[in-house]
Length: 149
Image 1 (cartoon, one colour):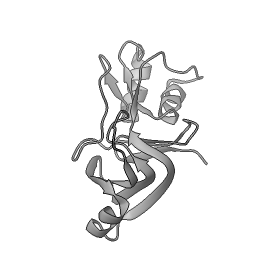
Image 2 (tube, helix red, strand yellow):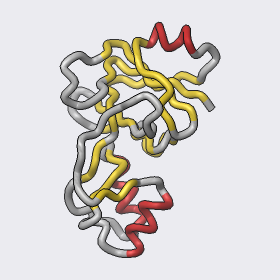
Image 3 (cartoon, rainbow, N blue to C red):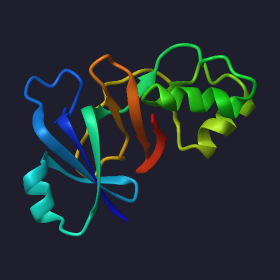
């Protein structure tokens, strides 16, 4: 299903000097199909489902430290997703149970950290943060996996 994620501001990367005001990211399946001003995206993709988010939308992050404590590996991975991250470092996904939980949820396990960015035809890993820095939505491989109510 084609989904447009629209926000007050879209950043291709978190250090992007020129964010797109009233921007949008088009997602189909697990891939980004387009990024740009919402008005242009709506013209190019009529009939797409639109999700509007208050705040700043950018690439999902890599969780660079120990995974949050929780009773089960699944809950530990979900806590990472709630933070706006869709990847963890291998050194912290250090049990078969954590790696399996990450894989089941499409969370990527990286050997080392790397820059993140929203790119055309790249994997649709997105996060939206409000003005206080709180994650209000996370999209992992094209699926909305976290939404703060």
